[in-house]
Picture 1 (cartoon, one colour):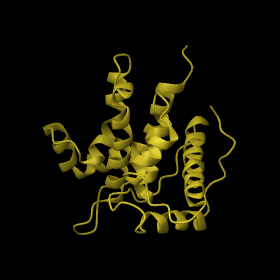
Picture 2: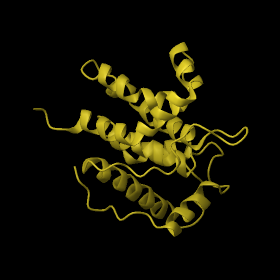
Picture 3: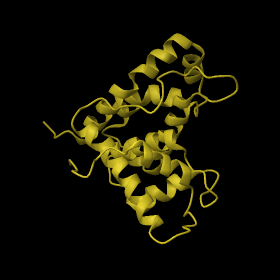
Picture 4: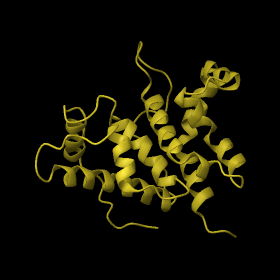
Length: 193
């Protein structure tokens, strides 16, 4: 369902969110901004609703130590707006603007930002894995999600390793991810014909 509360977050609001994420109030295992985008993309596509409190706690890897009155409401409102923005983009069949380059090439020992995004997306999927891979949709879900699963580097089956080692193919798949997100959303949320 379309949600009107979707004013895109401003740069200042994203900076505020990032400052909070890297503060001592939040677990070191919290997602960063790129990870949050990936995670919220999965939550927006998820075939069944995930309660706000549950997905926000997953982002922060537990309940943060809220240090001032109103902080929890302010941060929660920003995350909810960001989720609504992503959801509305998918709902209106608009290619999602990604927060990182669509490449698995990285600088030095650092993970590619797209890998971080894809790992967080999969974290969102794992919250409701049975719903994503139910009998009716298992085949289409697995097929559509292959590029995201490859990008995440979480799966060590030979076919994933083979694709990752073929840089041209892996990057070609990475470029398909924004379109795939819309296809996944439609697979679960388009009216039955």
